[in-house]
Length: 211
View 1 (tube, one colour):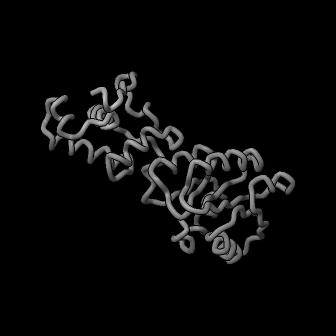
View 2 (view 1 turned 180 degrees about the vertical axis):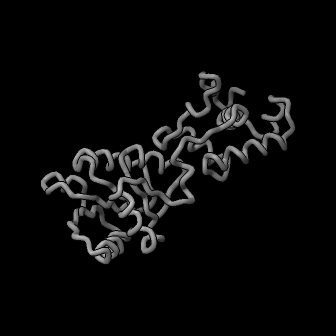
View 3 (view 1 turned 180 degrees about the horizontal axis):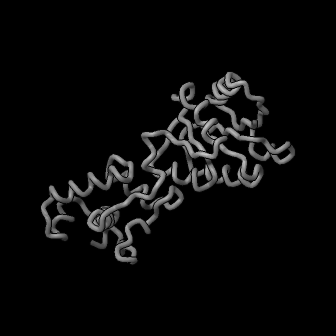
């Protein structure tokens, strides 16, 4: 088994793998695996949250080790990142603060051909199923409109706008309009403006100053 990475989680992961009775080869960088035997399984430690860099590392790692399972250990998962990691080739994601309880079962799951993710982040695995009204309102939020302005444009009560936003935030895994906008505009985290498509057509965006 290959353990890749360095930083705070590296030692804890190494100890947890050793406790499972696994033979471990240590690597600081993905590139070092190019000259090594292909491992049966790879564990990569991320220093911090899953990030855009993880996608690039996973691409290189998957190209190097073929179909061998990949498990990522990280300290946090931001909205949209889990879907990106799985699409890039990860088979499991384990949170550092749950390492003792979840690493062993996650290793068993991926070796059995399963995908394993933290339960509280499971909704990220599939694209958010937004309603047409939620997409419409989020499109206006991305344009910079506030709730009252959205209500006026759509001829609905402001409380209705808030209700739709609360539902959309829950589906996207975010807690605020700023987080929602960041996630929608950041195509590398798995969403992009396409998520706001209505009847096959993307929502038109304008600069805030052009309202």
